[in-house]
Picture: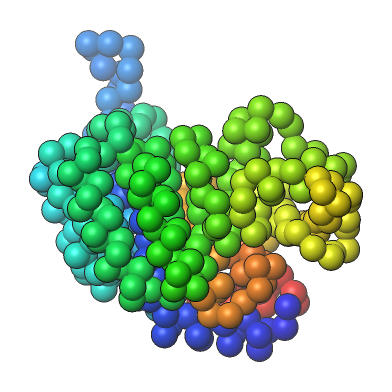
Length: 338
């Protein structure tokens, strides 16, 4: 990819509006020092010296979209509690549209991490992960209708916390297809095969293999056409941890294999660009946000994946769920290509 092409796509993202639908969370980081062991149990005593609140899950995807300079509307559920109020406040402060947040009786999903000298000692999760109630689903469907009507791309961000149930998935994708905007899906185990019609489907290797009940061999990808047909998606972007990503597309390409019904696939391997990995939390959210924004800006699936990979390389060099700005992505590109 040429630098001028990258810069053009990043600049174009500032004029976009992205709808993000999924499971929003509040991440809380309690940092402190350990000087002794508790007399009550053989556990360290952490004296907390600072607290940081951060947006997590689908809210972190929204945060990454905003860091690109694009406008974002988040459709999710939050509780009638302090964590929900804090999440809404943080979303509004970064310029995000909060009208799609549906208030429910369930608590806001909160993950509290306790750290000492940058080492995580414990994580405490407060959540209800059952499917949303019918009344909550109706409110989500109404919010999705408004959000997609104004959007240039749609993200479905699933953390298995009850928002992305079958009716929500079907309505969101159907409305996006009617409008002709790209759909990027970051799935989890539930409803894995419910995203037919998505533009880019982005599981990690473990998630895909668990859903298929079989290993995925990218060196001998005879089964991949059948996988794409079963998923019903245009592009499969498989994240491979420290090995980067692999984009699988149907059609002519540099690597082909005869598959189901004579279909050919093209596989592009995208090696990681991270120079230092400090914390992988939130890296997938960064990739998802950049994929959606770049596709909406006119990038090909391969261009979008390459740019998202640079963004992930920036994000993993930061603590916790963080963002990658266009300037940082350009700097990473320059450093990698120089």
